[in-house]
Length: 266
Length: 227
Image (spheres, rainbow over the protein chains, first blue to last red):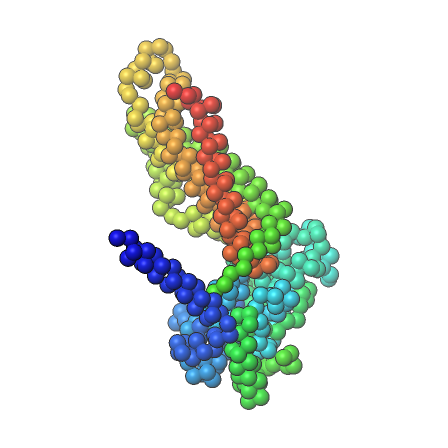
């Protein structure tokens, strides 16, 4: 008798098809509902970009970004689960749904806007080229023939690509720690980093006598949200607007960066 | 979750991919030649019936330490030590040189043990025959012992070469522009990570097949002859 076998096959097919449909349906606009239902907010953070996100003495992630994640979790009324990512895996973390939000010194640019959505800005940030005091660099053209370390996929990487002369030897590393290690080990002459990360590096390595050289970009941080999740985005923007008004954002910036938020863009 | 694949976004970056393939192959080629030579030398020192009875004690200890150290630590740690650690001792190497050295010493250590296994299977009668033909020790080793030994262990050695070639994917971490570096760079520019890693995965597969066949042919042609 072949009928039962046939039925079983159809059943499997139907099951697979419905699973596929359900999965496709789940994509549309209900990240916020899922968060409230699962009672967990998954936030991608970095642990290599002090003081925004780094590992404290108790080996747990701390920093401005982690405070921001907890603030949003508190306002939503759900616990926060931190997903540690590196610079290059921040956008993929959203695309693969490993995280609901990315709060990891994420800057906004057109390439990124094609694949993910952004909240309004929540903290100030700028990127620059740093180098030793005895090596002058007044303009980007001075970088010709010099090696410059940068973290692959970071905003600095893209900005540097636009302004660096063709003679500059751009060395790309996996994360900020590797980029800094390359600079402190003398493997690269200059380094392009976020200001706070560089500040931290210079404070810990006074023997480098490194200093600020050239501004790459003034770019505040935004929260990354999966493309099309407008409900979640609206809720996050609401929380940011409230926190800005109540002074919570300003206090956070003063606590971690030593200066408050000036005029953050929406 | 629906995924729309856009392979053109990755394939249009072919100059990067080509550079990546070039570096991966160059590093592998260098590692094969120098690493195998290093492996043969070290295998002689360690093999019973050869260096184990003739080489000075300090040399045997040195080679033994080298083999144990490399075979019992991860490749990426060796690479980082050479690139980030050695500058502190005054040896500043470019990313490419550091990758090359790391691959050579890594393959060399594994090749030592593989080739040693081949050497130790040499029947005693072969060596006695060589001696009775008035061949000196070097001639005996290079003409009588080594070719059949290499022939026996060649498949294992080729496998190890392929493993080391695939392992070269971590050299991108120190900014060597090999194939994985190209994939990472492409996907960090256009966020087509799935496509980038699929394309590069396929390229690695092709490279592995090509290298395996090339080495099988080259071994039989230049080193030990067909049966």
